Image (cartoon, rainbow, N blue to C red):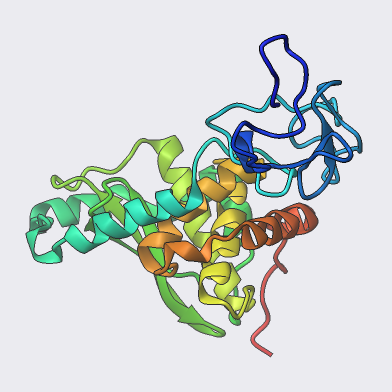
Length: 280
């Protein structure tokens, strides 16, 4: 809000710049800020309309605490980080990454890792993993599981596979072949098995970056890593910008809004796959 020394709201800045704090446009005629999705009254300290996405930022749909560190492209949801800068940071890190410098798992450590993953025991004693295992069948074979020392440390990834073809689920270990703890391993397995089922069911979008983001957000929700758009979106950017989103400038306000709308409209259908997939 632009004020003079006495605290009175001014109609413009000293330099006649109508784009002010947080980049919102000041409408001198109305005495309001244009926040894309709705108008903001600086005198009342309130939005004039209800939040279109309702209770994402709290129970009061007319109020949002706006801080310097927040980004809110359309007045829908506030992000305390910049998607473009975050993606660029990941792309820069990948440019410096040299696969040949990654430590290899010694044969003994690799065998230790494989022996530690007692798939049958893990998938029968863990209720959530047992439920996922029942979703695989002839039309969507259970992926094979292997171990690898990864640049990101503990984690995992899924590759290959498709309709009727088994893929490979890789568990990332440390350089000694040690696995993450049981809870973390469960999250990793559910996340990557979600990708396997997404591949079988052809879930995704034509745009390569959008496809990666939507698949990752669903997988993070299924694994229990996050529940809201802001945190799931940030998690998805990490893996998507390493692999699929090669241009950080792809993250325009419009695309972020579309990603949020997709998340909110599809969230109720996340993790719901036929049980099992038929090969016919």
